[in-house]
Amino acid sequence: MESWISDNIDTARELALSGLCDHCLGRMFGKLGSGMTNDERGRLIREALEDEGTDAPADDFCPLCENVFDMLGRFAEAAAERINEVESSNFLIGTRVEPEIVAREKELKERYSLEDSEGIKAELNREIGKIALPMIHRPVEFKTPQVVACVDTRFADVTLDIAPIFIAGRYTKYSREIPQTIWPCRVCHGKGCDHCHGAGKMYPTSVQEIIGDIALEMADGKEHFFHGMGREDIDACMLGDGRPFVLEISNPRIREIDLDELERRANDNDMAGYNSLRFVQREAVERYKGAAADKVYRVHVVVDGKVNKEAVVNAALSFKDANIDQRTPRRVEHRRADLVRKRKVHWIRADSITEDSFDLELETDSGTYVKEFVSGDEGRSVPSFSERLGVQCKVETLDVLAINYQEPMKG
Image (cartoon, rainbow, N blue to C red; front, side, top):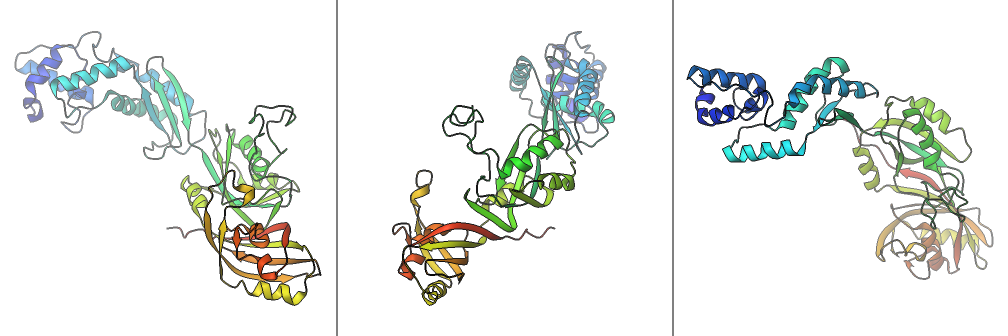
């Protein structure tokens, strides 16, 4: 008799005499005796009990699991069939067990202080997975599975939980009439009404939808979500190499979509462009959202009065590495906390100067309100370009020329 059995012989005898099947009997000591399955462990316990004169056969109907382990083959076939419907590099199988079975197991473990037992769900997951593996032809992945098949052991139903795919890239925006992301109607909140002409949104399309709708079709997914590294105003253009973003596709049945084709199809419009598409992991979303990248802008400024070239150039030069304080602008105070944010203007260059307008190119910290820096926003942005120039200024158009962000080195 093995030592782990002799050390637990009295408890093992009581459990065996209660009629437990081999799986359930062995699982009560699942962390003892290496190199065997729970049903093998259960049979070994019964043989040891017979050797000392106790005959304790399993009942025809296990009082704990209700013979659920007789269904392993059916569960495995159902899980394999569902998993094989979708593309993935790996998989994992989970189970949903009758609550009464889980409660009975918990009561049994507490009554006999079974600290070395294993849970029924863990055994079912493992045993179903072992049978299903040859039918699926891809490896099991425990930490980050691309698809999880959850077997409801009450009905042999299988539901799939498919991990999203994440596509990073950069976008440019040439239109001053589309937002970065879907903008639900402020009246009906997406349901469709007279205000939005039944569309459920304020604008016909967006940077997100142009590429997201195509990617969703290619991946046969459920929804798309857009995670940009900040955003520009609707009436601003995003030029240069573009703004970094991550596109998320939920429940994709096809994971390995052709990103060259996606880029080509997405760029077949005159409102936005996309480049440098690549697959990334989920963590890229938080990295992009948390990045603080300096930005380069070009703005066309009109003035309330007249100025000369020398005054504009001198005002621009005075903002070399200048610190500014910006209180939350009037135009966004309804959705942002009323705070004073400290930002830096790194440099400004002025050109195309006339008596009543000029262009500025400037680099600022991430999060700088450029329109308010130029106008002063009624004293909420200090110092401001208007203040230094001595004439009230207003940004007529704004373009983002560069997002100075470098991807972290791999490895």
